[in-house]
Image (cartoon, rainbow, N blue to C red; front, side):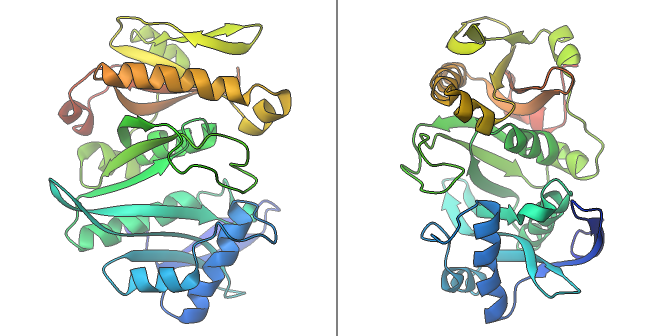
Length: 300
């Protein structure tokens, strides 16, 4: 299945849109991607944190990937992902720096389609790995990256970007997970085909997973050190609500402590667990060789 091409999606009002997903070509299209960023991260008039169009154009012309979704009726860009060629001791990989969808099309499935199109283009370049960062405190991003795309992580970085002045990040320490997307692994292929679902909380617990974040009156106040091969690290169902309640700093502090501890012990963050009824979101970490995880093995 290819994700490049024309698809039909519904926006929040229920209106059906015809969307074309393809590499970005013209200068005016690159300029539109600044508007997409402003919508996705609620930047308002201050766009100093947005990636400029000339940087996107330069990346696209020099072995980078800039793929976007365009509304065929209006011609406007409604989402995109971009990154550039990078290298480590194992060779070349694609570093995916940003992906975004306009506010009206969030939760429509467009973000997943754009990322899969990016994956196809990276594979065409002969690459088998992609990398990026995401905020592990964001429950929706956790479910998307770990649960939908199948990324894995064993590296938590405190205050990775320093201060970011947009409505999503303002006033919050910018901790990030560095994640790997193994593009041609069995795990990622099965996620792309919708054949590998995330476990329920009940399934994870039955498999031996233990919750490790401790609470006092509903507020995180520490974490437990356990010997189980599977651990559940809870994050807020809504960071915005945690911010309003004044608890987001506690969530950041204690989830960071737990992530750093268990990753130092060889655990891999590899799945998202979503308890719909209880409105709870967890990272599921497994002390298991990476090869087994990428081969699609699961403990439930």
